[in-house]
Every structure is written in C-alpha cells, then in structure tokens.
Image (cartoon, rainbow, N blue to C red; front, side):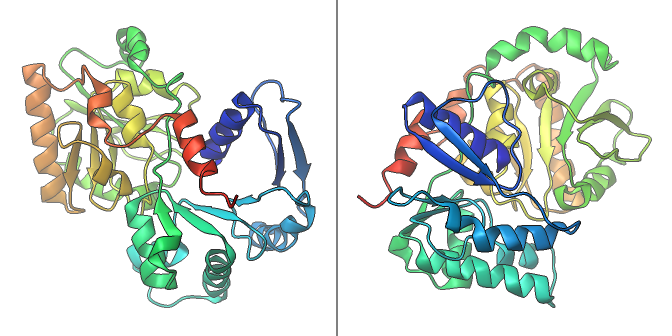
Length: 333
C-alpha cells in the first residue's frame, strides 16, 4: 500500500494536481515536487498501534478546507473517498482467528465508520469488495473495484536484459529452476506450505527469498531487502505467493510484466484478473502446490514458460495514470 500511495501521488503530480499529504512518516524517493505539501504527524509513543490510533483520530483536522479528501488509513470521519487494500474482518477470517481482541474490535469499528461516512469506497480487488459488502453491510452501489496499478517504467521486459548476469550472481546453475518468494511476513505469505511442497523435489528447484527477515531453511537463499525487484523477477523462472490472506498481491502483475509467470494460492486476490497461462493457481495444500510446480517445470523444460506478451495476461487496466483518472472520477463533484 505504501508503494501504491507513492505511485498515486506521482501520477497526480504529472497531471499538475496540488496535494496535501498527511502521514505519520514520509520517505519520498528523489526530489520532492512543489505541488505536494507534506504534513507529518509524528509518533508520540513507542507503541505502533497507539500511534496509528492517534493518527487516525486527528488526521482529518489537518485537511485543507474545501479540498476533497482521500483516505488510505482508517480515518473514521471526513473522507470523501476511501481506498481499501484489505479488510481486518477478512484478514481475521483467513488466518483462522475466531476470537477477536480489543484491538481487532477497534480496528473493525474504525473501518465500519470509514466506509459509512465516505462518499465512495474503492476496493483493490473484487475479493475485498465482497468482504466490505459481507462483513460491513455497505450498499453495493457505493463500493467499486479498481485493482492497483503497476509502474510500467520499472516493471517490463527490458529487465530481462540482466537475467543471465543476475542468475550467475545468485549461483543458479544451468537447468536449475529459480522460484522467487517476495515476502516480509513469511508466516502470512505461506512459507511453511512452500517449504513442505519443495521437500518433494531435489536441488533442481531453488527458492530465493527477497525480504527483510531471513527464512531459515537449507533449501533457501536469502537476499535480504531488495531494491531492484524488476531484475529479480526477470531472473526468476516463476514467482510465488501462498498467502493465508492477500487482498490483491502486486507480485502477480509485477512479475508477469517482467516476463515471469506466477504461482498464486487461490486466497490471493489477483488471481481473478490474471490469465491462467501466466498465473498458475493452487489451493493451499501441498498436493495442489506440487501439481502446479510440476506444470511450471514441464513448461520450463519445454522452453515455453517465459511470457513473450505480458500485457495479454493482465486482465485489467494497470497503467498508473489510467488508475489515477479512475480514482479521481469517484470524488464528489
């Protein structure tokens, strides 16, 4: 969601739209545009949840009067448009949490208030839209699905020019299958399931993890936090997410745009808008994951796994500028 916000701000700047951005922290890449005013409401406690609760309570006090307001955080009042990357109720259901704590109840109550008071609600996937309708009883006509865009200036087939040098640097041998796992939360992203499925294969399949936290396993190569994801996607033979909850999953279209198909669990929202050729779907079981791995390996051996025409496999408008225009169209006139 952080990258989504940066993309949306950048797209507004390109259209010369002035913005006031209210946040807890700001780390802007490159030089800041004079069209964007940043208001930073700094943390007051060492507890992230309390800081977030405080931010959500006071953020709208800093809105510029008369300007339309877009909420990304759970702002309970004052937003004309709410953009939702996932719901807490859906998250609790998919991780199997049956008893909600005080924080869970407060979070859901704030989401409810945000949806109730917004002029319109944008869900980042049809899965999220259905969660909002089912768990929060919001009128269907108020909630629309706009899948998140991808910055095509970064993610594209041009990244494949570095494919072989990156594979050599990672120590991938000829004939080895590089499976890329972008993850900063291994439990949520399905690491245990992935590792269990790989136990049925020899060292031919190499799992490469891109994320801050190492994944301790002899089959894994940990790269740590990575800034050049396009090059990694292009170097991989397939990318994978086996998430217990994934409202959308930008890994899908990002990897595909770099010419690399994805293996996605059916719990990942993006599976609905990616072609079956580029997105091999599996249920969250070891046999199902092994079945799609077998398909991917067979295509790898036949030389038919890489995607020559990525755009044909992403079944929604994924341009950042088109997405910006669609978002702005839902603001009240």
